[in-house]
Length: 396
Image 1 (spheres, rainbow, N blue to C red):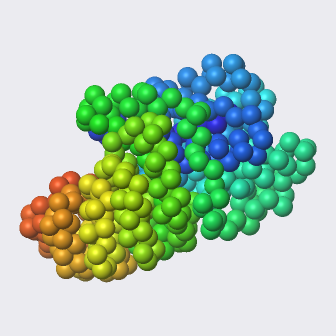
Image 2: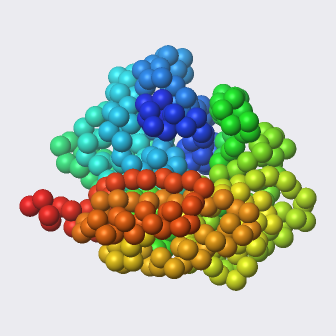
Image 3: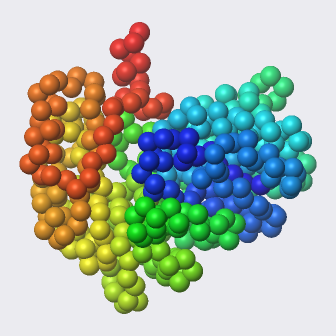
């Protein structure tokens, strides 16, 4: 039995937006395990009220293996929300009490595996999880020990064992389609239609990010960047349009279309097949300014581009190791608007050393460029980042 730990209703800020997406990464992993020959069921907690609701399903199926596999494509799961961790602990203990082997994979558990192993979890899959999970399930089914499987943490007696990390996958086209057959999408469609007038689905064209912004945690895919081919992605879009009829897609990549020529080929394939849909992406302002990238985005249906503007102060951008400039933010924003694409800014306040002058520079940039949407956060230190270590030093 697969599930995940992101309950929209337990995240009041996100639930207010009424833009829920199904757990794409979790369904991808379920498809891999299903393809390996296991009988798989999926309990989607995304729109549920409480982790206790899984108890009925555990009684119904009594699974040999209970897998909490978080959606690594949804950036919300990377924020290590304590309430979601507690939800994992609750579900793990319920499954463990029925004799099942409990396995967890996610950003928080990769960082805090000891806490999970002390709360009903037998194995933590660290980092990118599909291959590790498949190997682990096969090993356990054969009654063998998993000591040689890469990317694991588990306990033997009172000792915690961590095996070496597993290299990330390169050939993403080899992965099966996410197991959409295992969940009911109609509640998601209903919420979208009722609140926004259209239905949006999520898909991922890449994994990872090669840039080194020093506040960004990458516990799953690291600093590697691998892309599916445009042909593979367009085939999936065609399937989803025919099967579920969404009007809109969220391309939930950290960075969409980084590979040279990718966006151009994607646009050509969309035109060749006559596909009609709108979509939103995340990108970088320097990448957007490469030759004709914005034109190809516009012609293929891009409606909104989220960029990590972060700050209107070059001093703060440099301190973050962002690798972009305020001038690039301005130029990309104006060019996107020229092509009738909405621009959305991620902004941070409170980075170490930020002054009132830096804050004013950010506010002035926003007032000058007038982005269509803004997402604001306070700079928060995530484990495993340079920023985390810098903040830690200031507290000693």
